[in-house]
Image (cartoon, rainbow, N blue to C red):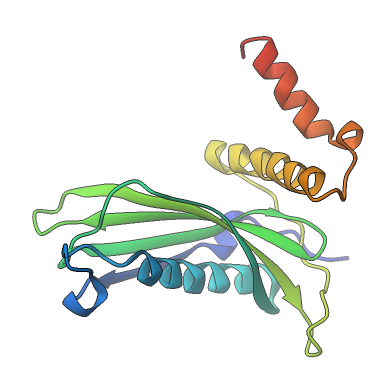
Length: 175
């Protein structure tokens, strides 16, 4: 039996400074530079959860809400939000801090990873048990996102997307 893990078991925090060579002509961090940092943090989080090598399967969502200026301190926080059979969703929050100590959320993203064996084949991973209210919310939403993705890819009938049905029922009832 595979042991269960919590999001805190995988939590990865990477902090670094934004240097001039990592910025555009407006002195804001290149989006691609930030995506690479997020991918590294998410990769570490997924390996901590699965105790296996992992590969990035997709970048499901990225919202750049604030530009990150040269000289800012950037903190990338990644943790598993849901574990499926061999794949896992990693939720990433990016914070920036200026020279005056003001800290704001600059970006959030959702990546998907798969754990693989030495031959690159998917392997089973531990179940995830969320603990905090935020972890439980992200856990629930991850299944909704997965079902939507599978329906759109034609791999799941809309009639079998139970979590999506429940979401639409909640929305219709004004909750």
